[in-house]
Length: 131
Image (cartoon, rainbow, N blue to C red; front, side, top):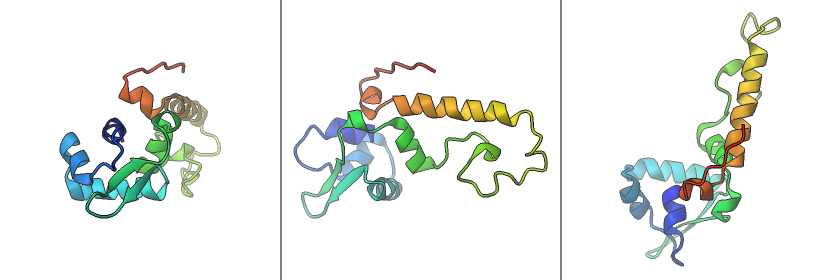
């Protein structure tokens, strides 16, 4: 996404091959990543000879947290605090676990930190974090 955002200054879509070469990512793997980003409406694709990808929104409006959730799933560092995981309560100690509240706070801190960072911040290495 950073490479796409940097290359997106051009008016034409950025070809997948150009992104793959710039980031040393195998093209088939990058194609899978772009498919996830396309389904999440973070990028748009243009077919054809002059085709490629554009960001769907300005880089300032795309949070790192949103990107991580789309590409990796939950931000939870352990399963028992992952609300999206139906097995999160499968731990035998879930109900009386004293450590779980700490992990919930850690998860919320991770989410806050990643959600306050935009793709533009990462592009410009301008990372004002307040955790």
